[in-house]
Image (cartoon, helix red, strand yellow):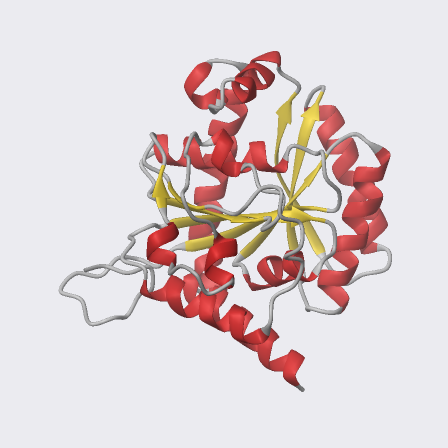
Length: 287
């Protein structure tokens, strides 16, 4: 049976998954909505997608993907359930590793929990070729754990001034402490491409003036009432209004994300990079 990792002794092997952490410096920027719709757009484009809800205490990715999990990652990290018992499949066919809502006490993981997670994730009998991790917001241990271990980091920003300053704070920590050098930027709820590029330029100037990092504009999502309506229906806008401006934007973003996965694979490798990153971080903390 195929696994997420490449190189096992299978009769047939698949290319390893590409891991993208979608993160933000502050809450309220629509990050989870971005993850759900990107997952839907990628799935509709023929990709096999797994999403991991990395916000262990204030999760709502399961709502947007219309799944009702019996168990969550909180149960896994508490030692009550295995990952295989937590995985659920959305109506679109997206594999979901859900987290809990209303349990804000899980703010950090021990080294043993981190290593246990990556070991069981390695053993899951899934054949995803794209993994999206919806991190929590801010600069907590959970955020840096998932973001620094992923193959690529997608930073979601909005026109709100605090969104940019908090995004800069997150980039500073990921660059100075975890050695991250490259960031994708996604401008959400903007008026048009010009506003997206202005926000991108401001963030890039803030960070590159003091940090050895590079930024690429992944794309932008416009303000769209259809997106708001989809949320109230517990569905993605890709399903409810596939021809809306935001749905077209997510289709474009998914294509760019898939193309970037092929490019960065040659630089960092696939899901193995995720595991090596987590393990290296855990070993570093023990010193």
